[in-house]
Length: 538
Image (tube, rainbow, N blue to C red; front, side, top):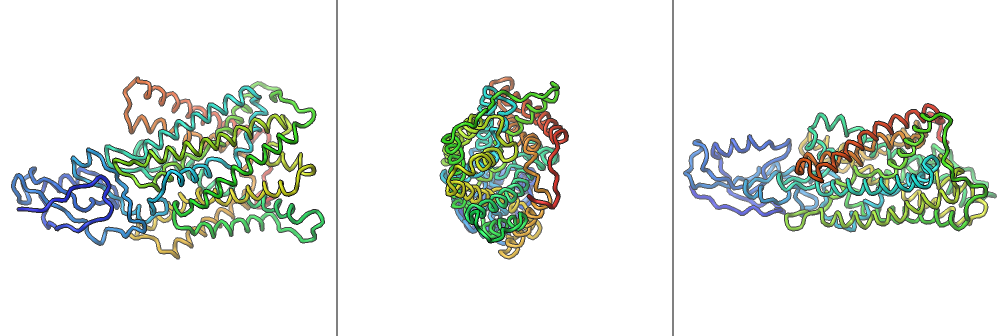
């Protein structure tokens, strides 16, 4: 038997026809059964296998065959120049490529034309947001010294774990790319444990953030209208729920952009607006100077254990300000990758650019904000509330309106990038069931359902942003702990070595902090109380 063999390239671009062998050797059947190909993952075309092993199927010791993927199972990629697996020596030795056809059909991996600039736009838009404006509130309890130390350590820690995730995105051993955070968790911890540990924090960081963005965007839109209309305006403003709806309608229109790469321009606008309002707020606060009778003494409760919980709640606020790791693997998945040009190189370059800008925004916000307002900074809204509460009369209406507009634009942009993993998961349910991409009309309906579902939650639970410390504790492992454990599991560093020890220490400390911050946040919510107003947005 004589067959023509095609060489396996590190990253095949499009399938090429090859001769089909009806009866592959028994050794090939055994190899296929041993390689646990996940559902909907099929051997890529032009896979060459030696016929040495086993007895069945005919063919002498030197015969080789080439298999062809059934044409009906090969999806038509809307962006053809991509492949989920990356090249690796092991894969070339085995001459086996595993491809998930769903990647060509889903929003996150539908397009693989990203680059370092797109990564910087997405990372900056998701990494900085209105949650950064509450950082000075944490200083009320921590004070100057511990506030800056804790904030700096949290920034370095989350930047380190972000680096781990970027490196773990591609596996040279298996030739696979983990394009979603939950996929990497499944590969590291097993599916059942990953669902228990990571599913809720990831869902909250996506869906919960979208709900909070509707509350923020709708409330700010109401303020923007009042500023533009002026004090003498006779036009009646909409109710808060109606402003939420206006924001939701615009967000649902933008959500029809097909995939994560297609919203790169939206993320760029969102990143510019985030830098704009962050810089504008701290510059105005610095220009106006500190308020009279400002105190910087840390607020201490009468009882020691209550003060301890207040400290932990402040740490939870800092942790909440540095969320966004659940999107890093998804952003990296939009890039092409090959053995010679792995995606981790441009991705890390984009991360470095974005986090340099993030540091230039959040550190002045926290330091200048606490310097200007001290213990008087509003616990609800932080710097944004302080700007309007203390400087609404002595600051130009143009400046106030511009800051409000920046916040609205950033909220709309952030909604798209945080909603994309939810869109991806919902469409994945369809593609797994029907083995084909979701039609455009179904995609539009699904995304509108999610967007307006978030609107319903925003109207029903408008006080969601009041529990930032509690939610920061719940989502902390996704940012600070799980990446360390996944590195140990996937990379298997030398036992008792530096990498092994550092990641074990950070992972365990992160889990302990998560439990303590969650308990502290819950206690503070119960002790101080929050204004629970179901279906009564303010």
